[in-house]
Structure formats: C-alpha cells, structure tokens
Image (tube, rainbow, N blue to C red; front, side):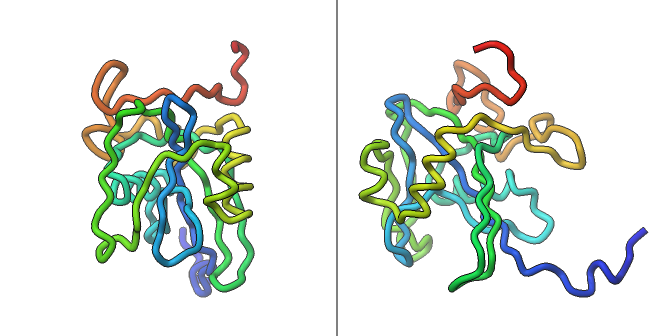
Length: 186
C-alpha cells in the first residue's frame, strides 16, 4: 500500500556514492575534478531508485574504467547543506587492485576530470580538502558493513558488469583485505 502523503514532498538529500580503492602498495585511488579544489574519491550521485552500490560502481567505471563488485560499506558521511543540498555519502569498499591496473579516464570535456591516480596515504593531506581527507582516513580505519537490498545481501546479485563477476585468479578480481563486522578470525 502506498500512502500518497509520503511522496507528496520528497526529501532533498542527495545520495553521493563513493568508492575506496587501493593498490597493493596501499595507495588510494583519487580523481581530480576540474570543478573542485583538490582530489576526491571516485563516485557520484545515485539516480532515482538506483541502489547506492550500483551507482557507485557505475560512476567508478565511468571515471576510471574499473569494473568492481561493491558489496560492503566502510563509512557513511553526512554533509550538511552549504553550497549544495545536504548529502549522504556511503563509501564502498572497492578492495585492492594490482599495482599495474590500468585506469581509463574519459576526456575532460566529457567527464569534468583532469585525471585519476593512486595517491600514497602520506600525500593525502596535500591533495585533498580537509573534509575529504577526514572521510578517507575514517574509511581506511573502519571495518566493513554489508550492503543490503530489501534485507538481502547485495552480494548475491549480479555485479556492475562482466568484470565484476570475476573470481580469484581472473582479470579484475579484487581482495578487500578487510574483515566484516562480526568476523572472529583475524
């Protein structure tokens, strides 16, 4: 049953779906947008009724060419309204990719990006804003929480694309290196 009163005035919160990806050296993948000062985690806004993990995977692929299955969240950041609408930003664990993983950044006129690269953790304060640095630091420190769709783990569904279904030893496979909440073994 739908109550029309619930849809009469929809919320104005934007859902910004971000991804934390690291290489084997521990460097963090960042993109450099031409419309902001500093580098940021890859990601972007979810479309209406788009599950957040799919939105994050879609933006990650569009911005870097990476196809990763995103099944866990490392941190959720709420940003109050300032120049933009208030935002809820789940940061998904994109895992660890090989150091030689190629990145494909679309031309600036199409993407608004000046580039993307893996940044050593010690350099993050120099290339990100204070709030972005705090978000990344928290994401690096936390364990993961599973992504659920209507109470069921999203990991049981098909990923973002063909590479997202890769298994260990196959092209595009990733290792998160993190223990889920409730894990008893180190």
